[in-house]
Length: 85
Ligand code: V3L
Image 1 (tube, helix red, strand yellow):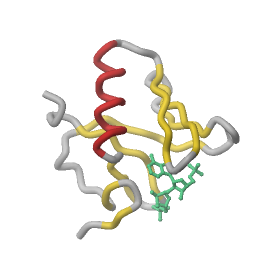
Image 2: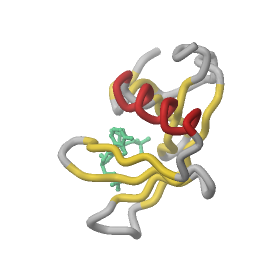
Image 3: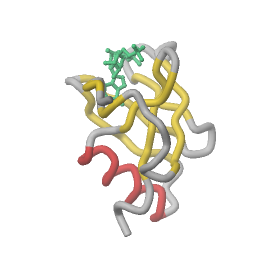
Image 4: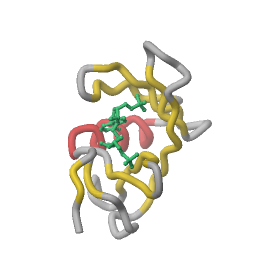
């Protein structure tokens, strides 16, 4: 069931898919009923808040992005900053 849903974070004009590992961590935490999930992304610690649907960088909490859980078919910019067509 892990691939029934995909997590996305907001870019400038569209949504990026989380990388596979982060997506699995997010989905497991969400299904478990956790309020948030901690992620290490490109060397920085982030929290994804499932109540506010926000990703927040822990060393600078002004760095926030909306997140969403949707089907893998949602149009996206790519995966974790790697553009796909
Ligand atoms: N996964 C991978 N990289 C991330 C993530 C994530 N969940 N969150 C932030 N970064 P901030 P456009 C993004 C990267 O939030 O053109 C995209 O992946 C983030 O990368 O301020 O605006 C693209 O690579 C940014 O480089 O902490 O749609 C890039 O932005 C850096 O961490 C441009 O995307 C700081 O993000």
